[in-house]
Amino acid sequence: NLKQFLGEIIERLQNKYPAVEFNFRKPNNDIIIQGDKTGLTSVAVNLLENAVKYGAEDPKIATVLRQNEKGGINIEVADNGIGISDKEKSKIFERFYRVGNEDTRRTKGTGLGLYIVNQIVLAHKGTIQVTNNRPQGTIFSISLPANDV
Image (tube, rainbow, N blue to C red):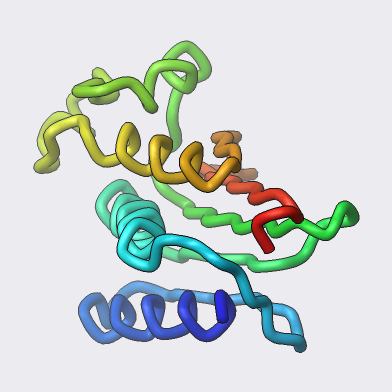
């Protein structure tokens, strides 16, 4: 049950980061999928903790779970952080790549997190994209196909 699964992860992170405002928009109905629970946990935790790590001074993180018009699933994680430049968006899913500015290099990381996230999403026959959040921040959007639902 993806709705329950994500809710539990967000609740754990809310307890770990009490100063962060987490918002989880979910459908009324349960969303049941077949997938690798450990891998999907890694995806959710990585995206949410990155949102905290690269967030603004007053971090706000919104997670949206919904079924799309094709019967598949969409998950979005949006933050109000520093964002990612357009030239680096195409590189962030590469192994060992770290965004190259002073703000991000001061944070801990190996450059493997988003690479692993992408590999897990691909293993579930899905896609992940990154776009700008308005007025500031980043949105990671995952789509999983209907045939895995």
